[in-house]
Image (cartoon, rainbow, N blue to C red; front, side, top):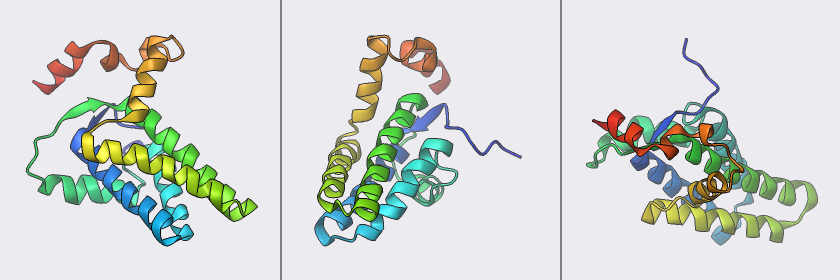
Length: 164
C-alpha cells in the first residue's frame, strides 16, 4: 500500500500549471458570479494537495491522470517542497476565505483573499511563475527555511541528474 500522506519530491510543471488553471476557474466563479459555495471545493483542494499532493485532490487526480498525459508537452520536473509551500499559502488563503464568509459573514474579506489566490494562480497557469516558490526561495536565502528542506533547490545538479 502506498503512502497516503506526503507530497511528491518532484512535481511535473505541466501538471502544476494545469491545476493552477483549474484554481483560476474556481476563483473566477467566486469573484464574477459570487458562487461562494465554490470556496468549499477550492479550500478542500488546497488542503488535500498540501497534505498528499494530487492523491486526494479531485482536480489533482484529473490533471495528473487525464489532462497531462494528453498534453503535447514533455514532462518538466521541478522540486516539490516549494510547490508544497505554495499549496500551503493557497490553503491558508482559501480556508481563510471560507471561514470569513461562512462563519463571520465577511464576504468582502473572503473575496479579497480569493482575489489574491487568483493573482498567484494566474501567474502560475499563464507564465509558469510560482509566487509561493519565489517566497520559499527567499525564505531559504534568509535562513528561515533550512537548506535541507529542499536539496534540489540547493543543488541543481541533482535535478539535472534525475532528468537524464
